[in-house]
Image (cartoon, rainbow, N blue to C red; front, side):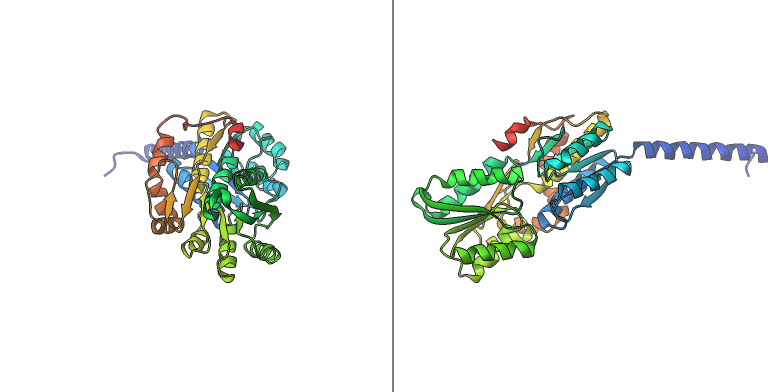
Length: 359
């Protein structure tokens, strides 16, 4: 039986309520909410980036608010970022599909909200960027296709497609591809042509390009939907050309496994999502902006017979890679050695000047 008198009980109850209220207030103060803004809503590659961001938020105990723009409009995507800022997020990671976002994003950063860029870079934004070395990536893809065509003695037409003309990262890829293909004087590169980003439009544009160039020896895309489209097109036309492109989505890997496409380069979407969120979180905790610099997410090179995942990750078979592409939890588990390498120090190692991205 309690020995507290009624008045004392009331006092004790009030004290407990006060302490609980203070604890709840402290917990709310410690909570971190990060906004994550992407282009190309629903694209399988973009969703792999989102999966990496979600894994980072889970590891950090942060809340993640994801907003996705249906296309590549920088103005539309900026509105999403501004909406998150107005909603009170602590930080924002966003792809930057155009310098038209730069002033607005810089204003958000100046207001005290930590900002990071991923996948598509605007050098006018004063914040860290996580993505591939774009020109070098194009060189690797061009070299792979060139070797498949027979090396320096190769002859014929190569059709090049770009789903977002004008985006610096994609323009750099095109430069790298063309640089490698120049080793074969007998090759003629046509394009880059605008092949659009939506799956239906992308296939239709590649189909039109092939109808205009049925003698093409290779067709190379610079974006995520291209390999799936080129694989379908190649299969419908007797697999007459070498198809090369980007990203390790389930659809792209299926095209490679069926021998309808030859090579696809990954740009480590898990790394892009995870590391950009981690860098934002560190900046929030330090109460300062993210540094202006570049983190190379790495280049993955995949054919039906070889898989190089980069970033010091374990070797996997093609079948294992296909399983990972469809399983975010298994992917997060696979990346644990890499996660340990970037979280074991106060700041992730390996930051380079922004200029290194295009070298």
